[in-house]
Image (cartoon, rainbow, N blue to C red; front, side):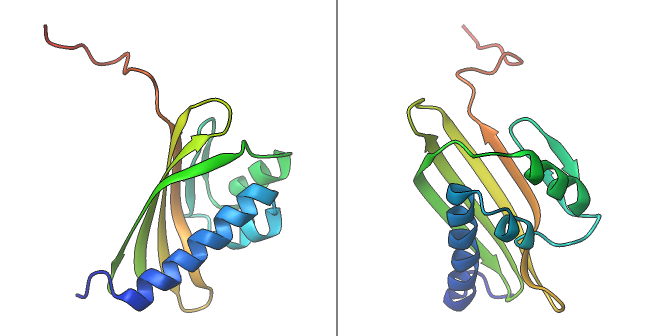
Length: 134
């Protein structure tokens, strides 16, 4: 299996960039179209747990705007020609909060590149479930 084929990385980056532009403008049509239209699609957000495209679309319909963010680091890995993962570290403008976003994408015969799973989270200042040695 070929890892990080430059053409596949470029394709995944184009999907990533289109999605990021849609987040900035809250373009629900593009955001919805970026996801695999299937009940097996998953999106875990900062405040939501969504299973299936219908739940994702219902959530999107409730969002007026997304918090503006600055991209800090983007990491993309491609596995073969039809599977890629994108990772974004970002900072929410005006708050200093650090967020993380992972998208798992697959090239599907009937749909092209689609996000099949996504996870968005904000970095906590500390982990209350972990104690430190000392």
